[in-house]
Amino acid sequence: MHLKKYSVTSRTTISYERTSALPSAHIELDARAVIAPLRRRIFGSFVEHLGRCVYDGIYEPGHPSANEDGFRLDVVELVKELGSTTIRYPGGNFVSGFRWEDSVGPREKRPVRRDLAWHSLETNQVGLDEFAKWLKLTDSELMLAVNVATRGILPALDLLEYANHPGGTALSDLRIANGAREPHDVRMWCLGNEMDGSWQTGFMTAEDYGKIAARTAAAMKMADKDLELVVCGSSGSAISTFGDWERTVLEHSYDYVDYISCHAYYQELEGDLGSFLASAIDMDYFIDTVVATADHVGYKKRSSKKINVSFDEWNVWYLTEHKKAEETNDEWRYAPRQLEDVYTVADAVVVGNLLMTLLKHSDRVTSASLAQLVNVIAPIMTEPGGPAWRQTTFYPFSITSRLASGEVIRPIIHAPEYDTAQHGQASLVDAVATVDEQRAAVFLVNRHLTEPTHVTIDLRSLGCSRVAEAVTLSDSDVHAKNTIDDQNRVTPIANASAVLAEGVLTIELPPVSWSAIALD
Ligand code: AHR
Image 1 (tube, rainbow, N blue to C red):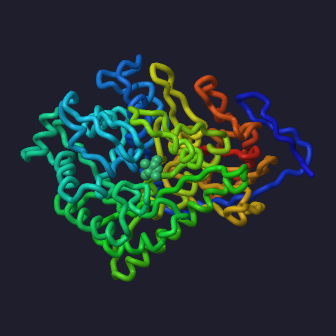
Image 2 (image 1 turned 45 degrees about the horizontal axis):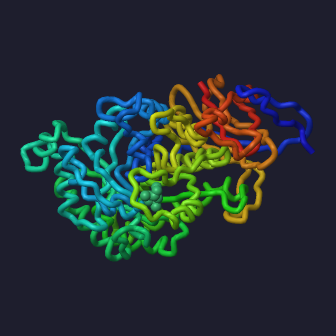
Image 3 (image 1 turned 180 degrees about the vertical axis):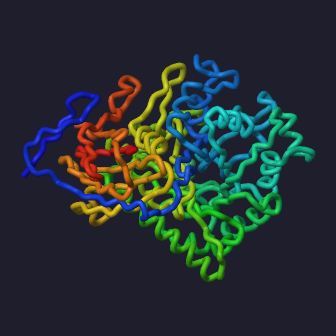
């Protein structure tokens, strides 16, 4: 029996007509249940030399909005609005065949190479120095990956010298001669990418990689002991070596590295939307297992040091579609359209929920990267010579980045559960909150496929007095998308049902929805 019937009465407001009993949930927020300070690096993103992420994405000389360096300023504005913090670069699988020296110095002398990872041509017209300029436009921090797969310790040290040494050495002077007077001062470095995957150029066993990663990390720290180094963890929780890989790699490298990476991509498979909406359960398990494994190795070594998690690739990705398309890709093309997933409302709800899960692990996940940023499984799309627009997934990321602040609070959630084929029992509602001295923010998902859920949130311990903003992303068509022809088909809209009275907030969450509430 239903109490209320959900309807979107206009594109700006959600309202409810009381008809019958709704599913309901109750959430308790206690200001003392602090998980950890909010880590701004959790709002990181990823730019790989893949498809049209760099070329015809962030970089398109000749586009009406391009600056003198060829960077599209309409894209820069969207990246700023997205609120991403660190940006991982230049790959991804790409980095395992990359010679960084190809992409610095006079552009006309830079070689065109084959990129085996994505079977395309790389012109090297954008390299470290150009990308560092672009990062300044977007106010983001660089997280740089070195090629440990097919190169070695010396090229990694050379790149470190080129990027970070102030001057007076061969490679730092070369950077200065190339026009970058100030060092790029890169703090976070990835020691390769997905070295456990058979698709990786130069993939390795955990033993081999653990030893190389340890030696590379030790040498890099001889140059700068304060670098923050990320060793490759598993490329997914479903890979057969997961667990053993982390243990073995860390047994070799524990003393020299600071982070272990996690990568995870999710997709709606065979119309099983219920399982897909509960993807955060897998991410949660993945993080817990990696942290437990890292702590196990640390304990065995009697080390007081803790290794944190860099979840440096996460997103929704229709990987099975990509694999089908890949089989027919024999040509060597320049910036081909690859991995250009167009995201639905349901995808955005999952992305919002995954971000909530990362926040809930802020005690150990202290860096993360949404993969990727522009055109390639991305929140931002562009058309050459044409517009740039926001995908559905843009919104939960940008709104969370804008509203979350202070400390992350663990909620107690009382909600009905439902069965999923992939993840067992899943809560109908998931939530996380942040709080600082001035404001609080609550992020929520309703995973119900057809019904709105009535939620009450006990906020008394946070001392909030006013709802400053309440927005919801949902649609009567859960597979609605934003496209070049209908760029604003899906946008978040004000949720007028949010009411705060005597420290208890009530709100109606539409089916398959993501919501954010800011409170003063
Ligand atoms: O993000 C796309 C690709 O996914 C990355 O290059 C790789 O690391 C992962 O397999």
